[in-house]
Length: 127
Image 1 (cartoon, rainbow, N blue to C red):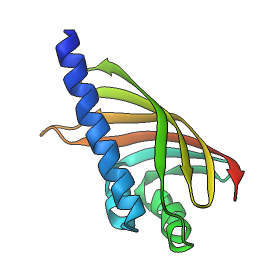
Image 2: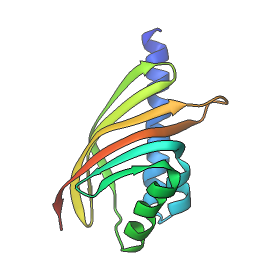
Image 3: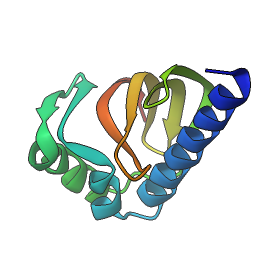
């Protein structure tokens, strides 16, 4: 894989991640949950581990209804593992807290769409 290929793949995932953030900030739970693969695993420290879209929705829907917003990522790092797998890490903050994303594992599906297969993040400070 060339550097140009890696850069293109990294940009695709960054754009997909930005759409997820926009959906979150817009309160669109359905769009956020739709970004996960059906068998995705989300490790949300200290809240727990959620497996599959149903459990992940069970976390996001009430959380998003409680009023968080203004989500921003900073210090974003993107690692292209192969043409169909990318890891993203970042610091995050929003109006209710801040923390780190240790790994978002984005995988490309047939047809080119990117979905979250693994989402590991941690709340470090609640406001």
